[in-house]
Image (cartoon, rainbow, N blue to C red):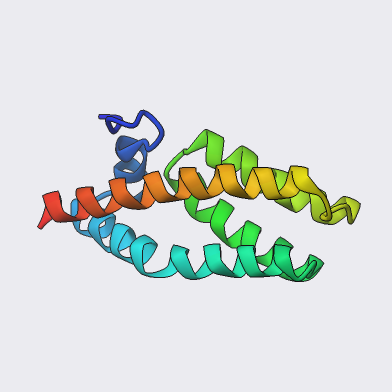
Length: 119
């Protein structure tokens, strides 16, 4: 079943992890760790820290790949590509960060809801 947001594929997550117990553990780790990586991404962009952007975006992208969250994956690849081009200054990057913040917030809310439902 794909979540109501149609962005998170919980069936894929269950298939990858092979049990509801592991899915619940993954969701708990997502809830605990991805906000840290998100803040690292935000700070790295504000500081024009190219290596920090690449590391945070890659960490986040890996987590969103487990969820098969295509929009988030594409946005995080954008941040990795921007670093490769060393063109992180400008309104476009700030706009993309704002868009990703919205996606991240929705995903985190959905994950918290799913975690509660699994308890």
